[in-house]
Image (cartoon, rainbow, N blue to C red):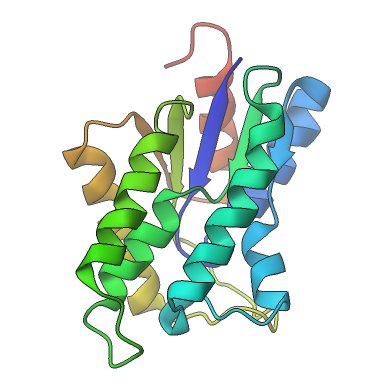
Amino acid sequence: MRAIGIVGADGTGKTTLISGLVERLGGNYVVCGGVARNVIKQGFPLGKSANKESYIELIRHQISSVTPHLGTNNLLVDRTLIDPYCYAMVNRDLPRPYIDDRFIEFLRTIWILETKYIEAYFLTSADFPQKSDGVREFDLEYQSRIDQFLEQTLTENQIPFLRLRGGIDERLNKALEFLSPGGT
């Protein structure tokens, strides 16, 4: 069974990519997604305003979304546990509620555990105009910092990932090539 994590800053096309993959792959993959949107709808701030409680809620929802499917289904995971770690690291420099280094190290440890079941990550970036959805903020500079830290973290930890750039169709075709038998 394969598990692929789709990561990137808010509004970079993760959900759009997953929708295209599901349409092309049919029932071969289970999607674990919508966690961040659900956490926000419950009143927990994410992005620049995230706090400890937000990250804990995000992790709790993510684990409960993925765990039932481990080892039994191919998975496409919309956002993963690397996200809270990378957001917390980028947010350290912002004037916002302080999150201590010990908690950030906890977020990193949780993510490292996730790498035991995620085969590879698809990293999306903000390569096309975005429309506000009323839930997330779109700050291109902030998104770029998140994407850079995600890529740096995956690279430094020698975690397999595929950088997806370009338009929707280009990203989809590159992802499908990776997921095809013999794809790398």
